[in-house]
Length: 305
Image (cartoon, rainbow, N blue to C red; front, side, top):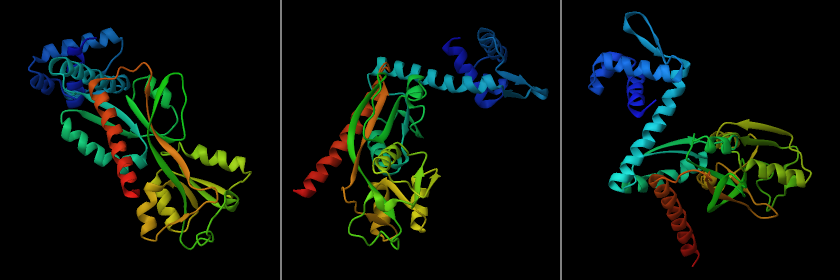
């Protein structure tokens, strides 16, 4: 299996047509067929199902290989660009919580694209599950979490920024008018939690266990936006990053509970596998991320001065 075969495979897999792929690659159709046959023989599996009237479709193995082919060819292009030009240029696959994707990524990405317009970035909403496995397996190059801390012998973790969490309820909720509330006040309440931005959920569960508080019901939702929308309709109590609820609080659609023990604090953690090669594009994105959060911190300090 070589890069030429992978490029040919990716082109055929994208177009699902040998003749069209040959024209795009400027090969003869027989050369394309020969390369695909050689690739299938080296992998000892069929990558395409040949259908009547020259139609083709990917087999299950072909679908799996296409994802790897994209990453391998992207890395090859990245290596070539780095060696030839010295300018970050390539692909990067990143896991990022929904909150950061919505509230921080647009400005960060705008600055990054302005400075490095030829880098290809792919973002996926993350959950805490399988993080170490996905980073170790190369599925993602870099990941972000909202959590107090993370420790693993196989992962490098860098604190990028602090972030405040808050409990929110409907403005007419019985606790909304209280000067302060305690974890004990949440006993028997409907607690809304989400699955895709859930690393700080463990913080809440630990706090409630320590306080010997059991919520009445726990309801899982698939996004922070859905969680906030439900609370705004008078459904339950939720712990969310303050930045995610700030606008709705200002508009009076949500009320923030002031807790007796003060606000909960977590961190924006930047994580990568210890054995991961930090490519020029990855290093550039990591550096710009730190610059972005440092700039925010400086603005906050300036506002207090």
